[in-house]
Length: 136
Image (cartoon, rainbow, N blue to C red; front, side, top):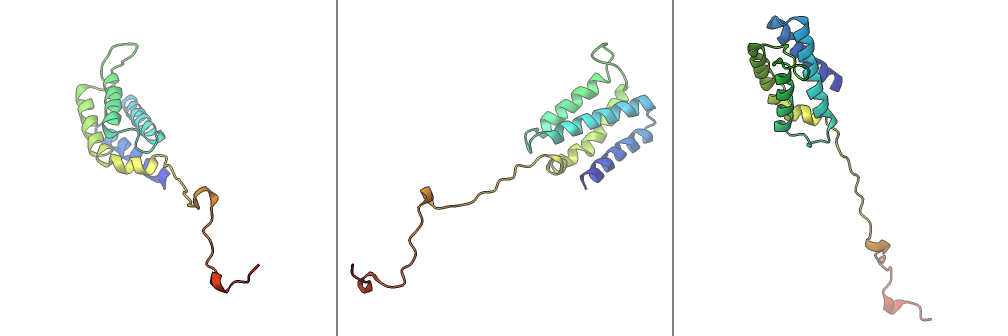
């Protein structure tokens, strides 16, 4: 089920890129950014990565691929492309961020059992009262 959800999301990203006539270099870069953000968000403990931190990371990657400052930044996307991508990601991934986070994050499962304190058992109910017991 998880693989189907991720595949569907990646397909919609690819369809968005084709719809906006991105060339193969732009499509590859966009999908790489999406996969990187998705994996980073999925690899963290359940709610460790917040919506704002994830979006800041995505925005940083997008800007790095929209500005030409070698060797750290290379211009793949134009300013218009970046604006389109920004709007698409906000309305798709970040609109449903909590759902993706819940489905793909590692969940901490705990099993708690209750026992008697310090191993002391409660006395069993006696079948006969003490007055009727056998004298020693």
